[in-house]
Length: 227
Image (cartoon, rainbow, N blue to C red):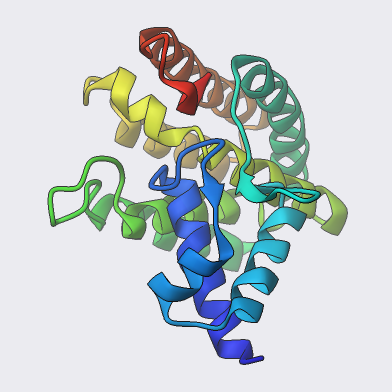
């Protein structure tokens, strides 16, 4: 089995899952994916197994694989736990961070601001480049945290939250000033103002969740993709 083939299909499927191109509960047929990506069935199975371990795909005995479902209950629970972990990591990062950490935050924010939000080909949703820059910015904010396990949990929760992000875009309709939120969050962190940084990250996550909840309520009753 080609390790490079497994990694390639893993990365492409993971991107599809996080950007909403593969919808919740969608069946992932191994043979079809192998033909579509021109890789072996073994490579597809290995990639799907990795995605299953991340909670992005569900493996069902005798039925194969499907995209993990989403729900309001899951979103609310996820946001609650993610906020707790983000706050813990941010508090420790501010206490432990040095000048190199500050420079990394500034650089990641610059990249985020300079990256196109939407795909250039007109596809709906966020561009892959913006999603990567956004993830990197939030990762840099907490990267000086001295608890490896807290950082691992933060990364896992962030990844799960990304599956809901396309819904936030549907609800916001470009009216939310996310750039301002990110800039103000960065400024609070660089100022080492723990209370303000915590207030801003908590509000930032809450606003995203509120937008997603609004989008959930707008979904047609027969749209099982986001129920």
